Amino acid sequence: MRIGMIGLGKMGGNMARRLLRKDIEVVGYNRSAAVVETLQTEVGLLPAASLHDLVSQLSTPRIVWLMLPAGSATEQAIHELAGMLEAGDIVVDGGNANYHDSQHRAAFLAGHDVGFIDAGTSGGVWGLENGYCMMVGGSEAAVAQLEPVLKALAPAEDRGWAHMGPVGAGHYTKMVHNGIEYGMMQAFAEGFDLMRSKAEFNLDLAKVAETWRHASVVRSWLLDLTAEALAQQPDMSDIAAIVPDSGEGRWTAIEAVEQGVPLPVISLALQMRFASQDTDSYQGRILSVMRNAFGGHEVIKK
Image 1 (tube, rainbow, N blue to C red):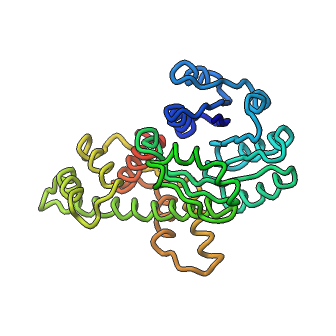
Image 2 (image 1 turned 30 degrees about the vertical axis):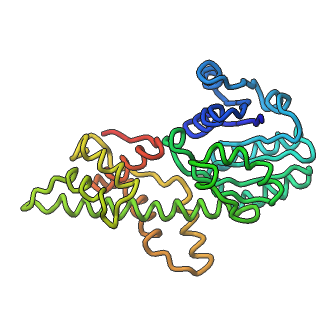
Image 3 (image 1 turned 120 degrees about the horizontal axis):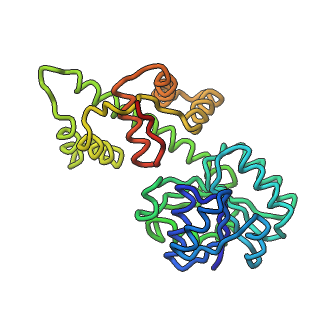
């Protein structure tokens, strides 16, 4: 099997590596040719010099997977591909797109008889070794065609991925997933900040986090990453407490307003991201190192 992968950054590059390990050939294109050359040398990626070159190296029915930033970059790639692909081909958007955009893009590609799948993808920089969690939206036929790729990317063939429903359902569930992530991260950050402020106990936060990792109700991967960060640098003194919101938490809060569903924890966690732009709190430092640990997001240093 052979697919095309457009966008070979932290996520896309590692997804290409994992697919190649599973004997699925990958034709790759990235705006930076150096990234393509590195993957070609390192793992045998088949290089493409342009979108047209990538499409020309795929046999029908083609599968082209996008791992591009949400917004104009994804929109432009889809419009260019629409003029190159044929009936029965499939475009997969595995980036963090707004589910409304995914529905519009599916309708646009349907006008060219090209299928569309929105694949909400989680796993961050650890996905190469651990596999990716994928929430997929699209038609039954299209998802069935993509299934070997999903099984190769997932932690195991029978878990870590699921067909969530029609187009839009994949990115919708990933949006809510990231909203929940905001709330969980904020709760951990606040809790550790509160313990740090209790001077009379002089709590060893790295020891607390390590203890909680085993059999406690709040044990989680986010706690694992936090424990590791605290063990390395408990005060995080060289980390700025600036925590960007990447979009999906904001979309989740907007969706809640539109549906009239109360989401106080997620909404307040989003507001704290906004507040971090003007403060230098310990909570913000904790949040920043968590984002870096699971997603490779930049940590702003002082």
